[in-house]
Image (cartoon, rainbow, N blue to C red; front, side):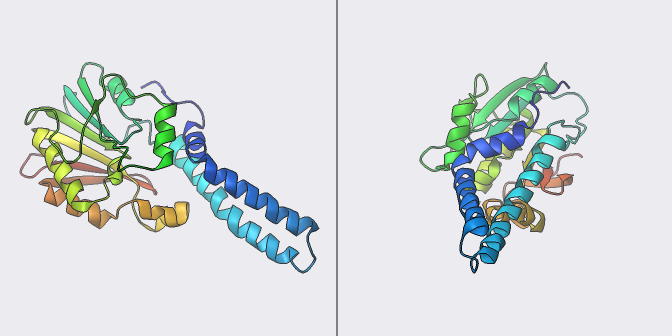
Length: 254
């Protein structure tokens, strides 16, 4: 599969989608550096300590982000399960920023693909998503869907459904389970669901400190899948910071 991403696109996207944070952090770092270099002698050690405490986590986070999104196997997709015959009908699920439809269309050129975007401006108010939507147009033919309503698909009509770094945006557990029930409804008996996510775990705390609270725990995801009638066939650790859950309907063959 030919690369569809530019060098350092991942870390650059994180910075530009969250530029107010990095601008504020940079301004604070410059102020602390100024105090450390030219401020009162009694304050200089404290300014240097605060500068280190501010910069080190941010630099570590950017380095880990570059590793995940630019240097790991995440966007090469060799971690996708062997599906036997190539899927003929694909469903991608995104929340305002779709990074998966174009690669899957490239990987499975003969399959029909429906890109479904469940972004809701009234509920998904993160400015970073709004900036991402301005930077990247939706995949051609993308359908807007509601996580609280039926998907515009017939029963058992999809061979492969992929929610790539998106489903964590559904914050309510009951709503999340109901949405995955809809995914299970449209999944063929031998179909596969792939859910790729960061987890609320120590590794992501190291990477993002309190930002890891935006993700869900492994236990929460497994509860969602059980409630939706899906079973975890296996987990694929793409990096120490990202996992892919490979799901099938209960009772389906592996």
